[in-house]
Amino acid sequence: MAKCFIFDDMTSTFWLKYRSILLYGLLLALLLFLLKWLEVRLIMVNHSFEIYAGSIALIFTVLGIWLAVKLTSPKVRTVVIEKQVFVNPSADFALNEKALQVTGLSTRELEVLQLMAQGLSNQQIADQLYVSLNTVKTHSSKVLEKLEAGRRTQAVDKARKLGIVP
Amino acid sequence: MAKCFIFDDMTSTFWLKYRSILLYGLLLALLLFLLKWLEVRLIMVNHSFEIYAGSIALIFTVLGIWLAVKLTSPKVRTVVIEKQVFVNPSADFALNEKALQVTGLSTRELEVLQLMAQGLSNQQIADQLYVSLNTVKTHSSKVLEKLEAGRRTQAVDKARKLGIVP
DNA sequence: TACAAAATCACCCTAAAGTATGAGCGTTGA
DNA sequence: TCAACGCTCATACTTTAGGGTGATTTTGTA
Image (cartoon, rainbow over all chains, first blue to last red; front, side):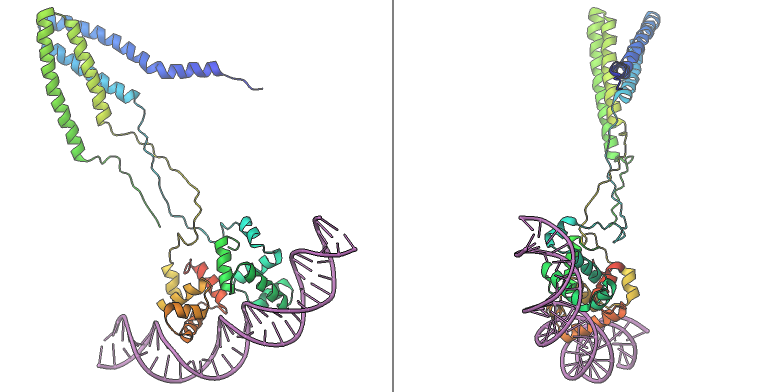
């Protein structure tokens, strides 16, 4: 069944979050030792305040840079790449069911319309559907009426824009 | 249409680089004055080396962080976002010049063809192009001939598949 | 400038498309 | 059961599309 490793998760995130800070603390301790040594060496021997200050400045500048690089979250820049894609006109065709319902076309009328869109004549459609030319004429008339078109070319154009034919 | 957005992250302008360096120089000069003042104030008066060193450490840590943040080039993570776009069939239409050349259609014939594809009758095309019906008939006959089509619906279908009309 | 291609228009004819009306037949849902 | 709908087919008619031929004008180019 479901086991929740909430504790594990939290400790690991805790370690990840504060590892840098712990490391920083350790490094700081080491630096303090180094500085104390430098202080003793330089001030007692040479009394060279400038070298001492310069060393501190240099070390802590490097430390700051290291800290910043280590701790800053990466600056994310989102790059949107537009690529031209050649789409096969008939490959991505999906019949728009809603538009089809709106038109009120029957299945047979849709068949006739689709064959019309392929450039077939009424006679060729009749042959393909095994019906008479007059039947196809009736269907095509209904198609034109339902698509509010005066010519079959217009009907095909409208149907294409509605997503009824490829 | 192909749109290519190339983001060159390395080419931060030279002006920006120079400005940062100049600012850094100015800041460094100010810091030297501040440090000299601190040296005089603290060392001469209090002989407090620890405070002096701590101040230097703090200041240069902040300086280092500031430098790092200011001067590091952004860590760029390129995120390619794919978006599904419903394309208006005519919006992304680019005329297939090669196919057009192959057909050998003249400019006027192409115009007639495109109006044909919109479902206009020859008379409507004639009105739109300010020519006679007979002229449109001549053009449409040529179109059918050159596209090897028997009907205008077939011509439109072929032209669409060739990428000549939207 | 001369020539080919394109664009324009006309006339006639046929084929196809579209309109209108009516009717028979099968399925379906109230 | 019966009205509604879809599918089928027919006839008659009008409109549009398409084919063929020929002609004139414009235009781009060798």
